[in-house]
Amino acid sequence: MSVERIRDKFLRKLYEKIANNGTESIEKGEIGNEIGLVDVQTDNLIDELIDEGYIKKQVEAKYT
Image (cartoon, rainbow, N blue to C red; front, side, top):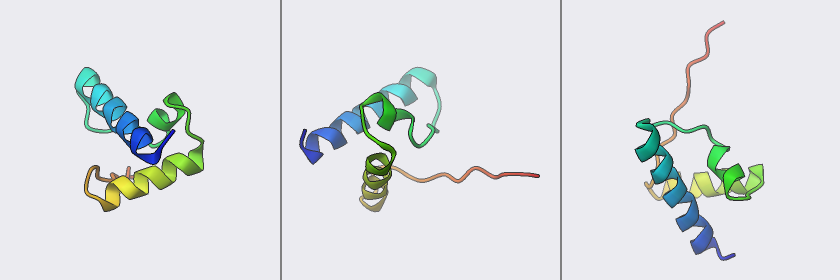
């Protein structure tokens, strides 16, 4: 599958999850796993989408 098709599939799945769940936040690997990407592929794709302004990274605060 081409990078363009993977990117489109990822963004479509992200949109569906956000629209259906009414949330603006999705776990990093959740969609990658659903479309058959391994973690490193998902990380690389997410980095590209962030760099291109398609998505924003949100860091969850951790309290101890």
